[in-house]
Length: 146
Picture 1 (spheres, one colour):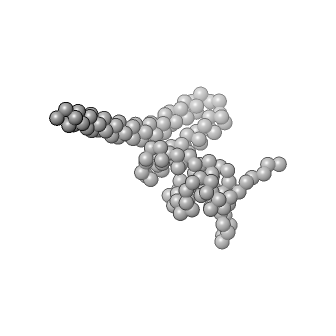
Picture 2: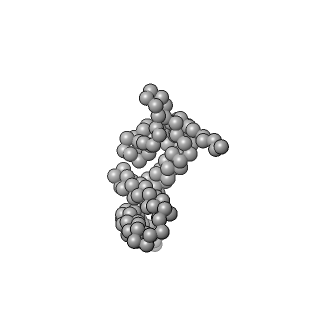
Picture 3: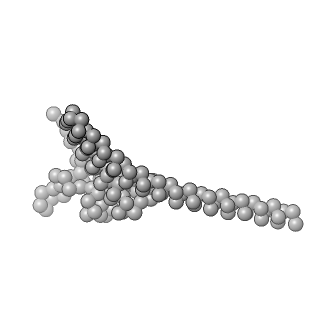
């Protein structure tokens, strides 16, 4: 017999370092929730899986600085890949497994495109900051020599 720990929205917010409002908003967007939520008029109980999913979503948001639409695309791709992993383990048919691999590659491509776009933007910012620093070093040297 396994014991499932459940949390209310405030407890989940505190554990993940976010707010109940953010959690509700992510539920509305379909990023979180929708599975065994609650009876009518009752508070939703969140489990460990919900907490881990929310922590992952928040990490992606903070790490990649994604818009909500891009964040949704990444999460949808991850969900699709998880479903494909389950399907992979349920079959040994080579044709089915080939289809699974092809689909997974498409989902990875979506995620990589978003990450690469973010990296390019960060690289551009880094270059600009290096240029500004070099300009300031030159100006400092000129001012010291005058």
